Length: 343
Image (tube, rainbow, N blue to C red; front, top):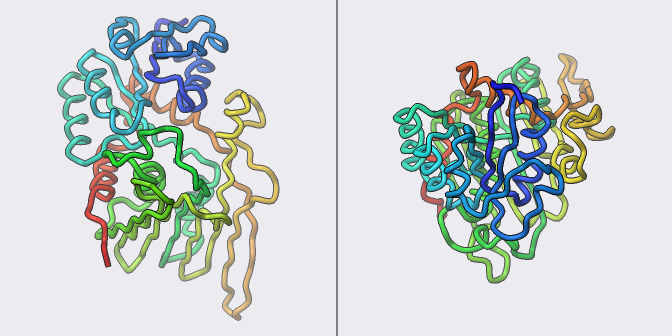
């Protein structure tokens, strides 16, 4: 390994560690996948023979060769483990939700500055293929002055998750904190902090302790309004992105393939990685002066979570600003933690 490669430890080798982190750290020459934490079954060495499997977080944090720690543990433990990693002299990359409230988030960022380590948040959905197309439509002002946008993450899961921390009434549980940070981050990355926001959550699955339906309404200048929906009870998902402006409309189904490809063992370096299948194109509908509609289909851009890990390296080794900014995460936390509207 190059002396400039970043020795990295992953705090859990469950689904997120196995799918969203290890393949990228392993395949990038600028990183070294040094260690993971596996409390029970030891599986990482089957795919990464050189990796060290520690029995506990404390053991991994005591490894002086590890420079970067990925905090991908249950939501309610993120802040504790992130703080411990910083105090152990490690840079950190923390999965969403970064914290369960804005005070915790501000505390971690302040601690990072105090100990001279970088605090980064794993908002990988900025590099989704479908969102990248939406971003291009916005940045190129295709639709003119914007009026309304709907952003959705629909699933149908009546059964409770086997991950207990997602289903019991503790901070960071429920669909809003599970999927909301992805969607909020995308919206904030495009439009910044909203002037006002409203939160609605409800519970419908029998015996559930946490919300399985959520809506956020964000108000921006000139009357532009964003509706963010996350639900576990949508049998027929609607388009993930719908955007209306004075000149026309855009819509796109959720079709990013990266998670499925990574689950299937496809390398992030494979030529087909991140390429959406045909038939999932975004639709732009523009109104002509004579009242006719002009419809254009646009292929999504290549989805590529490599971009996030490139940004991590650039932050640590080159001092380049990480694209997910501290203030954006704090705005996200403020919106998530606000009291829900009760009608």
